[in-house]
Image (cartoon, rainbow, N blue to C red; front, top):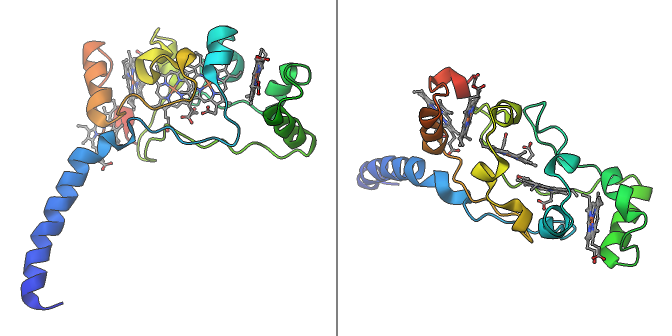
Length: 168
Ligand code: HEC
Ligand code: HEC
Ligand code: HEC
Ligand code: HEC
Ligand code: HEC
């Protein structure tokens, strides 16, 4: 690269970096990857009214909501819809002790500290951050989960907003 091109590219990179910081936060709104099994929240949490906490067992007591093991699915699917190809795949992975590799959807950067139980115990509903999952055939991220999003809600609810709340 010659000197002139270098002089030009430095400010361009700086602009790109700033633009990235400003615009990157909402890049995951609408993110809805395909899963190894097309798990349908509407059938389970909607039509059959299975409580979120039946599967996301950590959500009230720990930082992580957790995604259920196949054994939780088998509580019902050792009988329910046994002949469906997706349930056959599920049973086989259970028998072979091969966990289903669910693709993570919501994922904060490592430098951010988030804790589910702190929110749930203050009465913040799942839908405030995840939308109406019980009506979703396929889970989709609906909130940006960027810093402004977190801080706005903290201000409105008199929750702490100093940097160390969310950054170690
Ligand atoms: C029968 C079990 C079951 C029930 C009940 C259930 N879920 Fe899930 N949930 C899953 C599984 C399996 C996944 C991973 C596959 C997927 O993303 O669809 C998941 C994924 C999610 C995700 C995305 C996780 C990520 O990777 O970011 C959210 C958010 C979520 N569930 C919220 C809820 C809420 C809110 C309820 C109640 C309204 C609920 N779930 C009820 C099994 C369940
Ligand atoms: C509390 C009972 C229960 C649990 C736990 C449960 N399911 Fe289901 N599931 C159902 C019912 C009921 C249906 C609807 C069956 C029907 O319509 O014939 C269903 C339907 C399905 C279907 C659609 C089957 C088809 O092809 O028609 C899939 C796939 C599925 N469940 C996957 C899962 C997975 C994966 C888990 C664990 C993360 C799970 N289920 C946990 C009760 C359950
Ligand atoms: C205040 C916002 C907020 C509320 C309320 C909330 N979540 Fe989450 N959820 C998040 C964030 C942020 C992540 C990503 C966490 C990470 O990457 O560390 C997440 C991740 C998840 C995941 C993926 C697994 C995990 O633990 O990272 C599941 C499943 C989930 N949430 C389910 C639920 C359920 C069920 C409820 C209600 C009982 C709920 N969430 C309430 C913000 C929220
Ligand atoms: C819907 C409103 C809402 C949103 C959105 C929200 N929070 Fe909170 N958060 C709260 C409330 C209310 C509390 C206070 C809980 C308490 O007083 O124990 C809290 C508490 C916390 C705490 C514990 C603080 C302490 O006392 O040590 C952390 C960490 C946290 N939130 C991180 C986040 C992050 C990171 C995000 C964004 C991904 C976020 N929150 C989004 C409402 C929210
Ligand atoms: C309520 C939670 C919360 C508080 C309080 C908070 N942050 Fe953040 N911060 C976040 C989240 C969430 C992200 C990740 C944003 C993303 O992924 O787009 C972030 C990202 C950042 C980043 C990195 C930007 C990037 O590209 O990832 C910096 C730097 C930062 N915060 C500094 C601060 C400083 C300085 C303070 C105090 C004035 C502060 N934060 C207070 C939640 C918070």
